[in-house]
Length: 206
Length: 310
Image 1 (tube, rainbow over the protein chains, first blue to last red):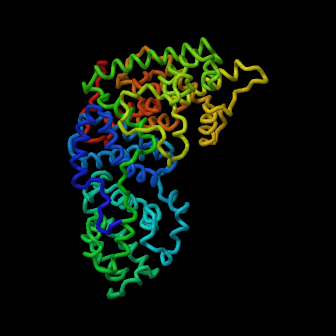
Image 2 (cartoon, each protein chain N blue to C red; image 1 turned 180 degrees about the horizontal axis):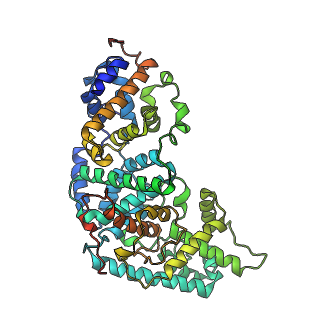
Image 3 (tube, each protein chain N blue to C red; image 1 turned 45 degrees about the vertical axis):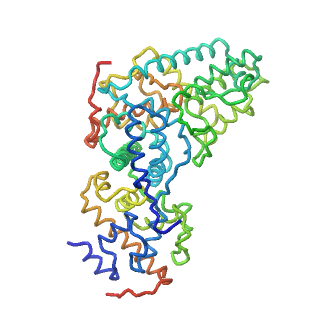
């Protein structure tokens, strides 16, 4: 992939398609619904899988249907639609964990299949990470609240403001949190020599 | 306190300030615009982002159908009653016909599932069962029939989407109910020596679904048939439930995630009672109202105003 290529499904040309799709979806147009589903389901599913892998598919379906039922009252474009979708998904998630009586945790995700693959950052060829390995690397060691912010930002493609709305915090809190998370990863990459391929021109203050 | 101050105390100095972090996470900064020390971080974030997909997704067809049926079902909205009503009527008729067929023919439905009915009868069975989303061999057509929702099927939809998810998509909930009915009928009508043929195509799906859930076929079916019988016993009720009878939000997911539980005896069937859409439809119908009453309900869903005038 071109390094500069955006992976945001809301690129300029896609956005106008999706605007049309949202309007047509209000009339239950199958083509339009398919468009929306393909554009956002992969993001939604990855978010839900990270929080609740065992019921992610069910929660995603519920999210879409809840969306359908309230679509008439929805106002906004594709970005707003996506943020709205994630807000609904997150409520489903919280309800799910309320029902099963335990808190969502990222521990359930962390130690599994991809954990070992990225156990030693120094050995990772970053350019060849898969999406899941890269995400695991990104989230490792983060408190769940912080991890969720990063997931919504990176996997969901939401802006800091949109994440703030979804998680019910201020945009400032989101920015602080994501900054800490990236600093933490940067430190880990540094500690493991992952940056030695470049020149280590950084100055160090103890 | 400023977080960056905290960070400077305990970490190396870095060009990664709050603004840069935000830009990195936006994924819109080319690596060439970043200090070299941030390239690995940039690359990890880029890799972790969700790739754009334009190809068919697992479960797409069912979901699109369910979505289309659910659009505007929120009480207080008036969209497309003319579109949904005939569909509801048709589906209920088909469902009733299928139920009658199950009663009349008993093991015959099971026979249809395995393609062992006499030709014309098999054709009829295939068509009516296809209407409830259950594909059985049809001597007249070589293609599989998932007929009921064909009018709303997306143009590029396909039933052979490569599944990257786990097995639940093998058998949809309603297919499950149908297969279980057949399984049950086959069990009861059969003698000791003619147990249900779990090797047949239809039943192998059932077996797979059971295996995916780590249950036996009997266990899986116990729930599915309980659920479907409860549903069919309420087919004369209106399509949309009065909001006052809705359960507390806390219960919605126990029902949503466990299709085998018929915990809401007052719950009327939804228009798309024949497919996987059904169960989700029912589940989210509660949730729609649930979220309207919950403090964190979607602010942009004015259509969620309760209405009991149906």
